[in-house]
Image (cartoon, rainbow, N blue to C red; front, side, top):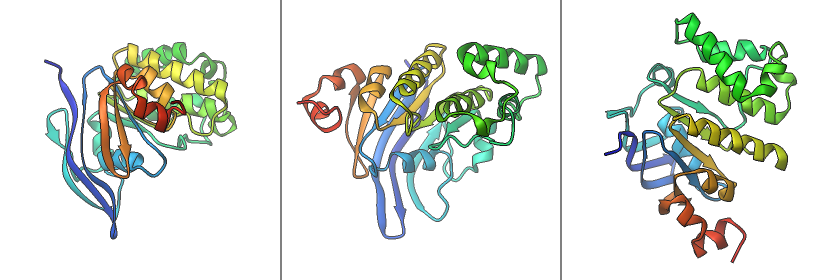
Length: 241
């Protein structure tokens, strides 16, 4: 039986009088790459923010269990200590720090110097473009390079679960392909990933399982490869049919 890393049950989120998420169930098992796709405004990013405790002023109901324990109401900095990491929409790198300093910030909860250096070497192997520019200020990187840095920084914390929010947003088609290549590489190394993404085709091609979110509800879920062939998914999200 698969080890459950994330289990969401009956999650409802309201901003004032607006119900953004209307009672969803979702789970991610150890080693899986699960994607949550849907149109802009469907509630995908709101769901990620509920997981990470970064929704001030919202009414959040339901259950969110991470590695078997409830994390409802847990502060985001406590979740980092529990090895839950998120790469937010818009990347959020430390622009006035170098690439290397950003990676060190990703490991700030750790004290194993040799392990940290080994991980820097490891992720520089996956992201050779970052290694070439390790002393460069993060703010001078291209959008795609910043996305790679944000992912590498999150991975430095040894996440049991990595949340990726719209990693392809605003990037050129060539860089989008590169980012998804990296997502697949990271997944192949055993990192458990929940990926929120508007590029449904690339997301489903990379994922093991998928969920479709529409107007705050999960309207479909299943094997990602099967969903790629589903007529409804093709028509609504892949521009086919």
